[in-house]
Amino acid sequence: MSAEATDDKEIVRVVGDMTVTVDRLLCVGFGDCIDEAPEAFEFDDEGIAILTGPETVDRGRLLRACESCPVDAITVMDILGRTLVPEESAAADD
Ligand code: SF4
Image 1 (tube, rainbow, N blue to C red):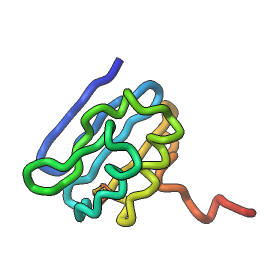
Image 2: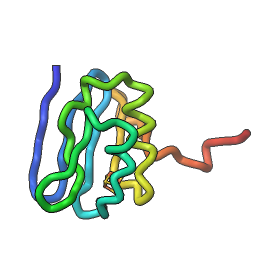
Image 3: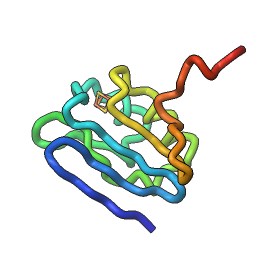
Image 4: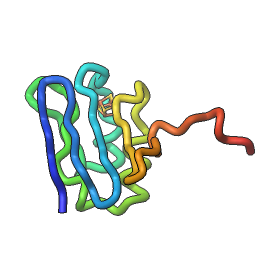
């Protein structure tokens, strides 16, 4: 089941236990997310990424596609409100 909210600034989609948000003001149209998961993202008429079928892509590839954004225009939150993407580098210790 999914829900979507769209305005001029953001596209928000609930995918399973995750909420994926594309910040349209940050997106600069490099297309990395589309390269990684073309079933999930595409460009709109303005060359800004929109969510098309994120529920059709397995969780790992969807997360990789979201992480691939060079300007962190895509945010993924889990059901508890924790940020999965972008990763907080301060939390990594390896
Ligand atoms: S990777 Fe980021 S900047 Fe590039 S199209 Fe996707 S959302 Fe936009």
